[in-house]
Image (cartoon, rainbow, N blue to C red; front, top):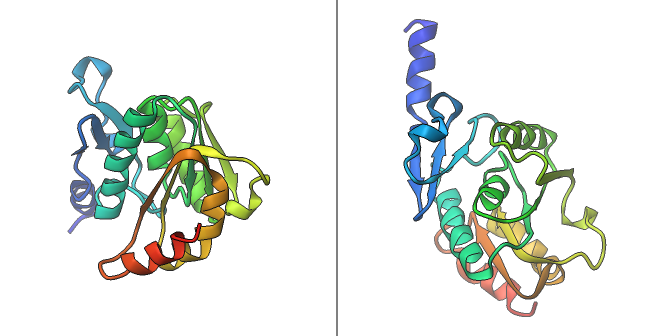
Length: 191
């Protein structure tokens, strides 16, 4: 296979995907002009080394729940823990959140999220922080917190989630494999 054939084959593994009632997740080479709009909110995500293209079930599930949460809560700030490509933070802003704070411990993820926020015209509303939830100031709370992480990480962060979610706020968690949900629920219950 020639280099061009490989690149084309690779690109075809990331087709545009409709998620929920309003989102359209697209790679940059499939981005549409507003005049070609499908009536959905377009989120441009460059598939790279960071996690989160919308094609994985946990990301898709988080996007659906994020859309529902914002519809329920209205235009509220969002915290995205483990942002990866920034897909959840960017989608939140494009769905009406005034701002999103996107944090990750991986510098490559922060770079990817920054590029993706720029591609979506929302870099000024998505604040990126290199670090984990412990890097956030004590007492800072959010009406909506999203985290698409592994189950053991959710268990470790259970007490911190309780500190970060505002009263009457919502917590959206993804990345939990079949059979792991009860351990996460048990860890969250005391919080």
